[in-house]
Image 1 (cartoon, rainbow, N blue to C red):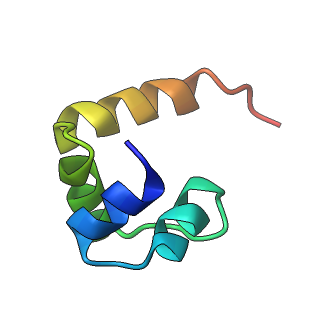
Image 2: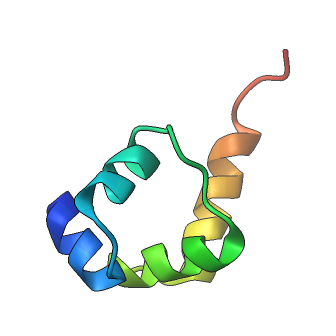
Length: 60
């Protein structure tokens, strides 16, 4: 799936998806749910995986 595919599903420009993917733009929870659905993921499961990944990062 390309950034343009995701952008089309969200009704946003491709640059929006590029900025999210590149970490230049953060998502609020509503945007996260929309993005998860646009890429065919269950938002709850995706969030759980994100939290697990963040838990594995050592504290500074």
